[in-house]
Length: 208
Image 1 (cartoon, rainbow, N blue to C red):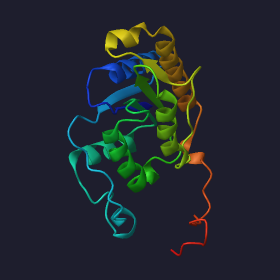
Image 2 (cartoon, rainbow, N blue to C red):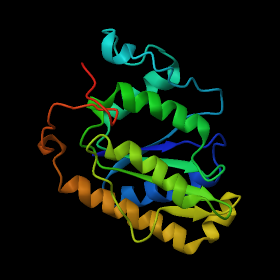
Image 3 (cartoon, rainbow, N blue to C red):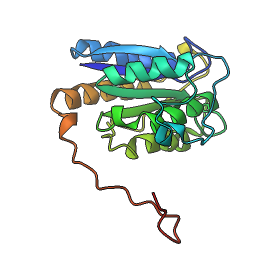
C-alpha cells in the first residue's frame, strides 16, 4: 500500500511540506508507504479545454510536459492520495489547480475509487474555502474522502510555526491513521459502476 502526498506549494520544504511530512511519518508507523511529490515552482500549463484527451485519441493530456507525465505515472501506482496546498486569497495555489485540472480531466480512470484527502496551510484565514475547492476534485471521481478529527488545516508562516500548531499537527496524524485504516479495509475495485453520463446545461441535454 502506498499513498502519494502531493505538495502543491511553490516553496519546497516549507509549511505544506511540514504538514505532509507529519502524515508520512504516521503512515510509516501504520505500515503504509508514502512519497511526497513536489510540483515545483516553475510555470504550470493549465487546461485549454481542447478536449483532445477525450475525443482525439490521445494518451492523456495533449501537453506532454514532465510535471504532468510524472504525476500521472505516480497516481497510477498509488493506492491513496493526499493533496497539500498553501492558502492564497482563500483558495489553493494557482499552479496546483492548473495541473490538477488537467490530471483529473484527462486521467480520471486511474483515480476513480481511490481514497483521497487534502490538507491546507494558512497564516490565518481562508482554509475552509481552499479545503472545499480541493475536495471537489475527489467527489467528481467517486473517490472516498478520508476524514480526520477536524478540518485538515495547519497554521503558520514557517515550518517551526506549523510545528507549534499542536492541534493542526494532531489532525495530520489522525488523518494518516484514517487513511491507513481505509486502505487496509477497502477495495477500490468494488466501487459501483456509474451510469452512462447524462450531460445537461440546465436547459437541454447535450448530444454526445
